Image (cartoon, rainbow, N blue to C red):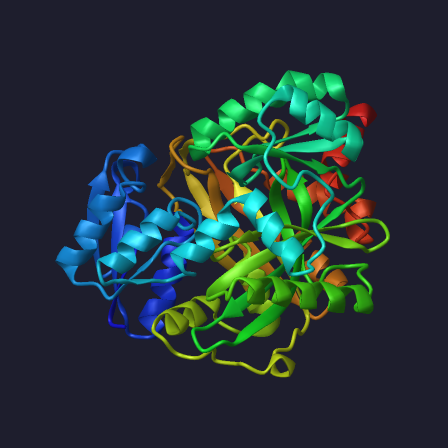
Length: 451
């Protein structure tokens, strides 16, 4: 592999470029008009305007991206995360063009991208799944009948959904009736598929996911778990590894279940198996993300491995750099904080120009940023500015390091969620590690009541 096209933008494009440079692989970037001045465009060996700012006219133009890849003579395409990363049609067309797709097979993406189909696959592999409908529900009457059997509250979900889009919690029949058609319509608009299904809502659940990796030689390993339960609007904000207050025996079973899930679909390259864990530490399969995750640096910090390097080597036909599970160790504690250009009270995006940016003076803090001072955060894309990754020997020392770091950061021109981090790091529910997916919303509500 000598030349890679990166079909993505921002910090993940920079992240891929960094590893490619280390491996002496040439990089080709694509960019939309709004991203012309972002760092990844300058850092790639070559960069090409792919279209207007809107993603449908630029980063999602499959044929244009592949035509460019062919013209530039690239060996492989890395899709990053989001955008086309879990589009099986894109992966298939890339391979049909004689170019390596840095990810799983189109068949695996297709099978696991459909949440209903993935539930069925996991059930067949004896991986526990959340109680719910085995097939899609086509009408409100069908949904009401199924919900009565499952028991409220339930989650109404789009089968092809992701990133918190296309899911809503329904406390009772009235709520289900109110939201059923709107979720179907939203699923159709965002994902081109209006299939929905129901799952039992797991109260006080923790969202814990496992990083898995497979190669074309039949090797599949896990690289431990990440707790992703600090969420707003069903989207992750803070991730950490190891997961606090998670017994050794339950962790071991969870990790093995993730490997079993990967083996069930002959998984290749990087992937993540996501679980919901209840108050009794029983876990249930949620979904499999057939791509590199936003929070992959957490795993890199505790294992010491470069996951993008693993991706490139596996795509090139090599065996996993480490195939013996017992040789993959987790040391210390790592946390990732997603810094967004958004109002920390409402979580509404806050586009604008970053007028001043100084990441402070705390040593040994990893910053994966898509922007520099003077860049503009536009309303066209996800408003994440950067990921701050903290590594320390213990969880308590990682929290203390994060406190010091955020107190030294200067970021002006847009609103950010940094004030939220500064206050939530002192919240008892976070410090003691007992938080669930409802912890952040509940804590925010309590802050309002105190005022």
